[in-house]
Image (cartoon, rainbow, N blue to C red; front, side, top):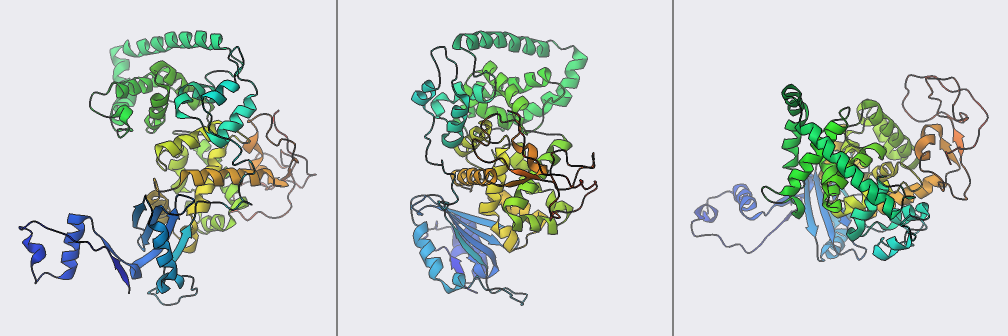
Length: 507
C-alpha cells in the first residue's frame, strides 16, 4: 500500500543515541520521531477517507482531513497557501482518482473516499440577497434610530443583521434589542430609566442570595454553587477577557450565574450556561446589563441550555422533518440505524450551546446573531444544523457510519468547519424552504412567532398532513394526506383526509 511520510532535516542532541542506533527497528524509530518532533506518517491503505476543505474562495488555505477506518482523524491546517498545490497532486494521483470505484467485494479495501470541498455555493443555491447587506456598523445602526432613539422598521434591522452581522464595536448596544431586553419602540430616555431600575433589582437579587439562612445556603451550595464554581474557572480562559488568575471578569460571570439561579429557581443552573454568559459579558461589558441580557436569552430563545425532554424531542422532530425535505439520503441513513440514529446524538451539543463548541468565537457569534434576528424563521439554528450535515456529512452516508461513529465524525470536525460557508448554506436552505409550494404539517409552526414579513409577497404554501396527530383524528392545520411519509412508524392516529387549506401565521 502506498503511504505518505513527513520528512525533515532533523538535528538531535548528542545524547539521542537511541535514534542513532543502527539496530533500531524502523517502526520504533518512526514512533520516537512522532513523539519528539510531532512528525507523523499515514498509511493511506488504512485510511477510510481523505478530504480537502478549502476555507477561502481562492482555494489556497483550509484543512486536509484524513480519517482512519476507526474514525480517528488527522487534521492539517494550511493558512498561507499550499493547499491548492496539494489538491492538484491528489487529483492526479491514481490512488485518489480511483476512489470512485464501487462494488468492492474484498474485505481489504483497495480504495478510500476522496473529495474536495470548496467554500463557494453555486449561484443557483445562494440566497438572492446574500451580497446585498454589509455588516451593521455605527453609521448603519444610527440610521435605524430616530431622533428619540427608537428603532424604526425593526424588520429591516433584523434582516440586515441576519445577512451582515454586527460590528464588534456596537454589539453591547445592539444585542439587548435582539435579546428583547429593550423594546424597539422604547426611547433612549426610557431605556436609561429601565436600566437604572434593573440595576437596583439586580442588586436586590444578589442581596437575597448573600443573606440566605444557613440551611438554605447549604442547599444552594450543594445544588448550584458547587457546579458554578467549577465551571466558571474553565470557561473561555483562552479569551483575553477571562485570562489569568484572580480575573475579576471571571468573578462577575460567577455572580451572574449564581444570581440567575436565585432569580429563576425553577431553571437554576445547568452545565453549559457559563458558555452562554461568557460571550455576553465580554461584549456587553457590564455585569448587571449582562445579567438581564442572559435573562432575555433564556426567556426568548426557542431552544438553549438544558431543555426538558419534550423540548429536545420537538427540536429533533423539526430537524428530522427538515432533513427529510432537504437531504433525503442522510435522513434515510438515520432511519436505517433505528431509534438510536433518529435521536441524532451528534447534534445535541450544537443545539444546547448554539454551536459555540463547533466554530471559532468570531464565527459562533455571527451564527448567534443570525439566529437572534428571527428573520423569516424562529428556528434558524435548525437550518444551521442541516447546513453542517449537507456540507460535512457525506462521509456518514458513503461509509454508512454507525451512531457512535457519526458522533465521533462530527465531534472531530469541531473548530475545523467553515462558519461563513455554513451560514451561506443555511440561508440558502431557508430560502428554498420558503419557496416550497407545500409544507408538512409537522413544520407548520416553524415560523409562527417571527411576525410580519415571513412570506413577504410570495405564495403561501399548502399544508400536507403527515398523519401523526395522536390528540385528534383530523389535522389541526387543515392539511390532507397525499402520500405515505417515508418516516418510521410511531404511535398515534393518522389524520383524516381533509380539504387542504393555506398556511396561517400570526401577523
